[in-house]
Length: 363
Image 1 (cartoon, rainbow, N blue to C red):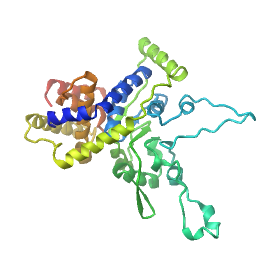
Image 2 (image 1 turned 120 degrees about the vertical axis):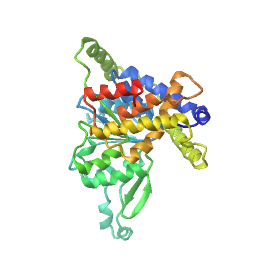
Image 3 (image 1 turned 90 degrees about the horizontal axis):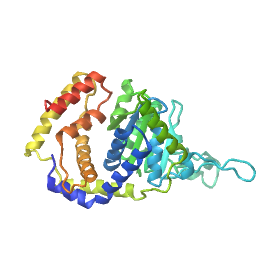
Image 4 (image 1 turned 180 degrees about the vertical axis):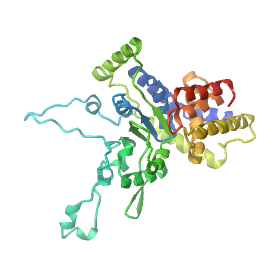
C-alpha cells in the first residue's frame, strides 16, 4: 500500500517513538488483564493522533486505562492516579490539582460549555476600569490547553457541547465568538457504556475513528483469578516510577513528518502496487459486508483515515518484532478495521463469519 522503502525510512527516523509505544504497551498489558486489544488500539490512537472510544459496561477499567496512560506520559500526578489524599494540619483534605496538559470530565445532559472551555469572567463587567475590554473567558487549565483529553460518557453531552466537539476533534480548533483558536490536543479518548443510536449523535460518533469494545472477564476460574491478581497490583501496588515523558512530543513529530512527506509526494498510496489492488478488493468486500449487515456505513472519512492506521500498525508491528523492514499485511490490517472500525459490535456469528472470510482470503 505504501512503499516499503519509505516505511523503513519512517521506522528508522522515528524509532524512539515506536520503541516507547512498544514499552508502554508492554507495561500496560502487565497491569491490565484482558485488555490487550484495547491497549494496542490505544497505541495506534497515540501515534496517529486519531480519537479513540472505549465502549463497555461500568467497572471494566475504561477510565483507569486512560488515566494510567496519562500518568505514564507524565501528565497525571501520582496522587491523581492512586487516589490518595492527605490532610493538612487542620484536618482538611488537600484539593487535587489536575495537570494542565491532561483534562478529564464526566459529561451529563446538564454540562455547560463553560465547564469544558472556561466560563466568562462576569466580575470584570462590573469593574468600571476593565468593562470596556468586553467578556473574557477564564480558560486557564481548560480543555483547549490539554494534550490528552478524556471525556467520560461523551454522548450524554448537550447539543451545544457536541457541536463544539465536532470542530475541536476534526480540525483541532476551538471556535469562540467568531474567533478560531488552535488547540494543543494530541489524543482524545472517550468512554461510553453503549454506542449511540440517536441520529443526532452519529456525527460525533463518526469522529471517533477507533472504537474498542470492553467487557467483563469470562466466568472462568483462570480469568477471574488473573483479573484479581492484576487488579490488586494495579490498585494497591502500582509502579509509579516508570514514565515516558517524551512520548507525545515524539508522536507529534512523527505526524508532522507524515504530512511533510505526503506533501512532497514521498509518501503516497501507490495504486500501481499489486498489493494495493488486492487490499482494495478485500476492503470493498469488508465495506459491503459491514453495510449489508448494518454493522457500519464506513463513511468516506473513516476509509481515508484508516489508511494512516494501517501504516502505523505496520510500523508498530515491525518495532515489536525487531524488524527493520515493515511489511503491510493485508489480512492483519483488514482484521484491525473489522475489530476497531465498525459502528457496532458484530454478534458472535457475524464476527466469526467475517474473521473466517478474512483468514481464508475470501475477502
